[in-house]
Length: 337
Image 1 (cartoon, one colour):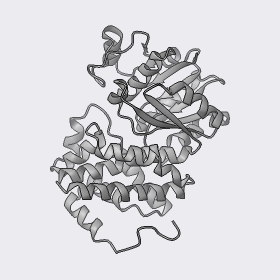
Image 2: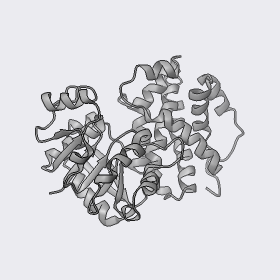
Image 3: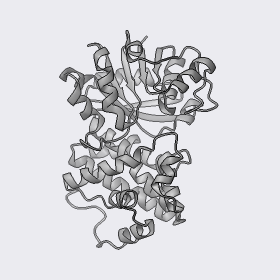
């Protein structure tokens, strides 16, 4: 049986750790916050990030990287993208040659504009490129925890590793597909959060179902354009990590990024919204990265650009919609797309 270290005890990290422990794997869950550590250790519940959900007793919370990674086969990173580099530096001294890394982080670094696999490549020895994988797809943590049917994708450049992890993560309610499109899977997981903010703002403005559907569809076109430019497979964006996760995040009531958009649509400022949040809405920081990445790659991403204008330049959401609707008319599918 595989031995697993899960780094990050937010709602998704805790859920995945609990699922793997229920399968019989030895799982240590690294917890940053002292309060959360004590909750799990003493009560068997992560009240801060997953209230009301009783954890399996075999799941062990730990507070040091050394303890978490000792004698492990798989290291699952489930931390916000803006601390991914810091965490990877922290665990690096305890990595062993036999370990594989799995990222369930969805984001793009602000300073470097790198996705998480690129961050890993800059920090770790070259042999880890073939031992790196990422997990993405439409998966609200709370629904997975209560065993509602869910399907996701694990991507690795090594098909052998992807299939090994597929077997590790699959359960009767958690179906896992494999892919080798590491870049595409990660871009889907990151940028869908930006589109979800736009969809939430549209709903907050009561623009209706037509507008939401248009944002989802044209948002997917933007994600695909950037992804293909960066070497991703175009069909990835029609899959679980692409269209699947985009639809979920843009429409689901459990979506933190959609909630941010909803509040913007009702007139709240970004400062007011973030002040009241316990969990991270990745789309806020990712919006800045996507805006800069689109400029750098010379890719047209009008919806993401307007979300940037709203979040970082204080643009009125109604004006943003007016500007989107008033752009020059064009083909839906470009001949060279």
